[in-house]
Image (tube, rainbow, N blue to C red; front, side, top):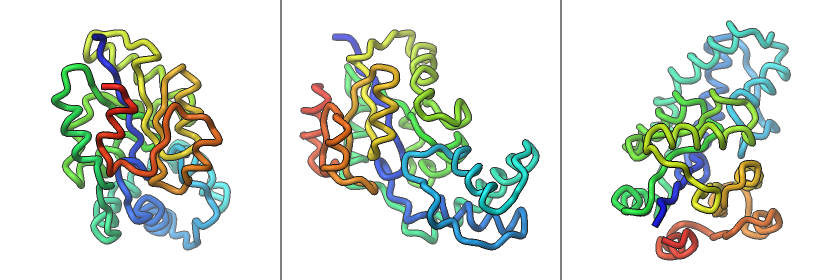
Length: 227
């Protein structure tokens, strides 16, 4: 049987970080630019870090220069581990079991497809000892537009495993309508989980292949994936 490629979203799917990303971006705003202010009302769920940063710069009148962007990202990554430790960040129920089983499954490989910048993804997953489960990934460094990330993941998967993964053997696992749209943009299948800000009814309205309330029932995950 041809191997299946499972591409995981992070925030709201693998982890519940207690708003650590937003808190770290807000702290970095003060640390880097000396700017105080709320980030409330900026959409985070399913968005890429560069998109979010542009909204922040627009709100506070910060020039969108490469220098400012780089300094802000550096400040965000520097404070993120501390904020993760303070925010009660946790791995969502069922996820660790699924990741461990997938790592040993003869017909499954896994990677990331996330709106996080790569350094942010590594920091968040490394905080929980999960980074090494994902030998490849597509990140916001590849494109600010989430729907453009799929081909990057497939290219890296082929480079790592030496395999082409047809669309019916590629799965996105994510918690927002943006994850569903991203999967459809490159023909992948999608398993949506209502562990983030979107409920089952909201996700179902975007026609994922499967939708689950959570990943607590790990057998339900594997039945959906078909492995």
